[in-house]
Image (cartoon, rainbow, N blue to C red):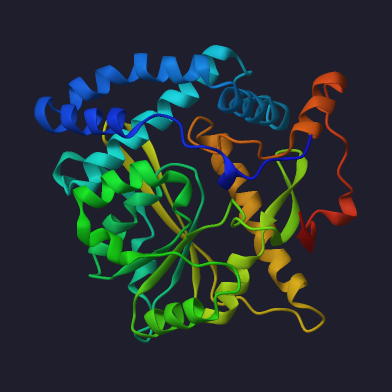
Length: 332
């Protein structure tokens, strides 16, 4: 069975349910809304075979990669789903502009000051909450333009845009090969704005530029296009993570990745490959530190490899000569 793209997965839940959660949060407060999450998550966990299987697969791989992490179980997978729901609830509160109800800590915010009046490219993953970028930018009065694909989550995005209509002005939907969009982003960077993008999922579409990189014991496809974009923008690249450490408590960390993405002379792919591999290694560290906060509830590695592993109980060895992975353009 071929691996399904995350972008083709139907959105679960309903607009009514999300609006009810927003209503309860606004009328009765955070504690009541938070108390409603366990039964809601239990329903979606029981009925959501696809997300449950993806969660169990990830937890099993993480445990094989690092035996110090907890072994996979249905109870732990449920906690994985519940942690995601809590992040979504915080996301709604955040987009309501109620920042005073959060407590933030962390380091590296000075990296977002920029240099010589130019902005930086902020990369992140589906670990923690990428929405807290607005908190990072507030210290320096910077505008953050988030490059994203929103069609798979129309319901929740319609709610968030209703809560904060101005926020939609900072979202840029960039399709692969969109030259006009790249020029727009280049202008933003030159004016001192920041560009933010998640780099642990490839964009939708039949033609993808990917790098196969070792991650949690197996090779997996990571998108190359964000690093090509970073090369075209010609600005520093930093990694930003915001992990939940308690009720409305987040630790925000910004760390440098490279001052500029410069491709090797022999090929652009080789230049991107090193940056993709470095990001994948850092993401492994973050998954080990915060195992329940990586929220990719889809067939990230592929069902065939998962089925083979359930039979053998082990991973195929990775060629030590190819630890950086290979980049290629694939057509599906």
